[in-house]
Amino acid sequence: MTVRPIVTLGDPVLRRPARDVTPEELASSEVQELIDDLIDTMRGAHGAGLAAPQIGDGRRVAVIEVDHNPRYPYKPAIPLTIVVNPVITPIDDERYRSNEGCLSVPDLRGDVERYVRVRVEYLDRNGERHGDVKVGLTAGTFQHECDHLDGVLFVDRVGDPTTFSTWAQFDRFRRAAFVAEVEALTARVDS
Ligand code: NI
Image (tube, rainbow, N blue to C red):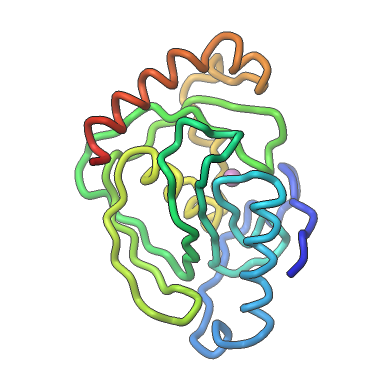
């Protein structure tokens, strides 16, 4: 278990689509250690999720966890989830405005559109197959991490560049309205 350096915007590994993990690879100590390193690195950086390309690995593996995260106190809790070879499918067309940041894009936030309801099919670290429905901010977190595995960063999805901000300016000018929006969304869809 190791906290690994997080790759930042501009490194080509973040732009390369990651490749599927085979069942044999998933069972290997190398990929199991990669998963442990992703968990440690995510927790060490207080992230809500981390994808393998963010620590320089080109395989389709990501980890997600939200547990009273000081970076995101408005996010509903998500138990630690390991997603291998995930496929994400919107359930309907409804979207919400998600103000996002990324550990690979230090001190930048911006508004992106995310689907409110998605189905996520993936393997866990033991190779068990899952098909889960995720809604609201949790759905947004899964979409953000799955984007990383396709070489897509949240900055690519910011439709209005005037919404870009640093964390300090997010806290000053945007946080209150955003939290009110997403709390209303959570109350509506996440119960
Ligand atoms: Ni990210």
